[in-house]
Figure 1 (spheres, rainbow, N blue to C red):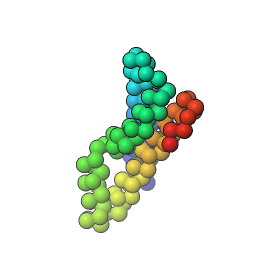
Figure 2: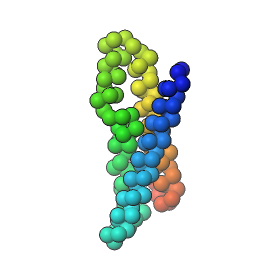
Figure 3: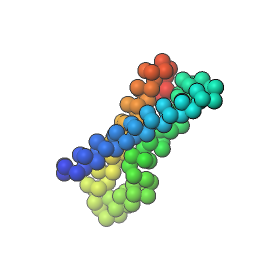
Length: 110
């Protein structure tokens, strides 16, 4: 595998991780400021932000669709494989963030 793909793979993981952790923590600060229960809001926010973290990590939906199209129609299976690996990396970052948030709030985020 080429060096640039490995760097992109790692970036996707940490971008998704950061979107979930950052969005959840900042959102819970907003909940605290308005008098809501921050941990309950952390649970709700982390569940609703998952898909957006994956989309942000892979660089938007149109690039992913274009890469899938290129992989399927042009017969470039390597590009298709790379795109699937990037999506799995982003999903791993989201799952890791959800585990950490679950540990902090002592609830099952799942």
